[in-house]
Amino acid sequence: MGTEIKLKGDRVIEQIPSIKDKALRINLNENIYGTFAEIGAGQETVRHFFRSGGSSGTIAKAMSAYDKDFSDAVYGAENDGRYVTEERLKKMLTHEGQIIEERLSREKHPTKLFFSYANTVATIDFAKQFKGHGWVGIRYQIEPDEAYNEIILHIRFKETDARLQQETLGILGVNLIYGAFYKYNDPKRLLRYLYDHLDKDQLEIDTINFSGPRFAHVDNRLMSLQLVKNGMTDAVMFNPEGKNILPAAILYKKNLLALRGSFRPVTKVNMDMYEKSLKMFLEENKVEKDNTLVIFEITLSNLRSDGEIDERDFMDRAELLCSLGQTVMISNFQEYYKVVEYFANYTKARMGLAMGVNNLVDIFDEKYYRHLSGGILEAFGKLFYRDMKVFLYPMLDENGVLMNSNNLKVHPRMKELYKFFKFNGKVIDIADYDPHNLEVFSREVLKMINQGKTGWEHMLPTGIAEIIKEHHLFGYHPQKELEQNT
Image (cartoon, rainbow, N blue to C red; front, top):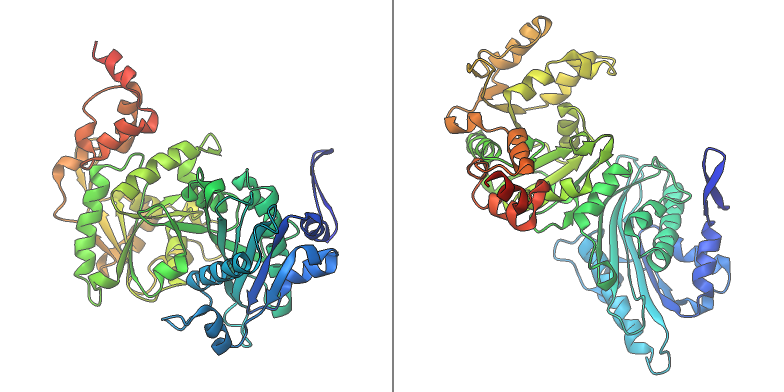
């Protein structure tokens, strides 16, 4: 892997060091010293450090605990019997870090920056049905007397050859270690550098979490957003605590109910739609509450302002949804059928989509499906996958007429197609909605907040207005409100 040069027009904007140069720079730093523990895909990362020269000053130990019993003897047995997990990776990082601290005297090595790098990976299986995935991480110091930092990420392989996947993993590992030590002060750039000498069709990174003193200012939800924004993955998820979570782990075999919206800000309409659709969803056959997950989804296009993503605006929305105890998904899916397709990768259980009338009318617009060879029919075959149902929240049209599944207006060419899905029970009205909410529109609430007007507070769920005011979200400023009322 030679040095890459990034150009902007004819101008060189960045020189990317080769993988050998990155490993060599680490090796020649007399203070960086640590261990490599790699399970499942060979010792692919440490190999680069051995080959680049000067590795004796960097590598305290390199190991691969391939045998499961031996691995359990070193790191302890897992309750679920699985080895390619975040929990396993954390045990590896902690265990190896403790060993180096115990065996090397700080008095003798006062300037050493200790690290432990680990990965636990499953490459593509023999039948080529499962492409493979893994957890990769580093636990390390920037100053000798400082607490440890951690960067942990989950990857999915896209290549269909085990040897190529191993090589990809080795390059990623070097990029991670190099970035951890030399790019830690700019996590967004560090994230992009993980793909140095790699392509998006080789590897997907769908979860990443930064922690430790050097990343105290980092909001991992914002890092999640970067993964989607940079095209590293199609969707990311975070829990109410704001921690990035692995989609595969949380979606696996679950009944899923998804609500798509801008949530700018989240209103009583959104929460009424959520509560009433969830009640209906739980009444469906084979849907149990304990095995059901509700997801509030925001598409990337919904986050763009003048072509750019407004990160502050994104964080405002995320903060409110998390405060309501919701699981949030950020996706790159324009069309609803892609959301359903994505979920179908992880579960065969029941799915539901809760939406307003205007969203359903949009779904029946052919212009969104011109890129598909089968057009709207292909899209709808994917959208109404298995037992998928739409729970429809009504709206008032410009004349004050209540619109629901019985009188909504789709294009004349789509009428019969719509009737088919309606007749077969794929579209169900939310009947016990709160009629007061039909006058609430998030765009109006946002305008009122920006203009310093009052009266928007009662349109939001309990406690949300207080958070907006306390943290000055969505452009709220008490001075504007004061000026409006004087």
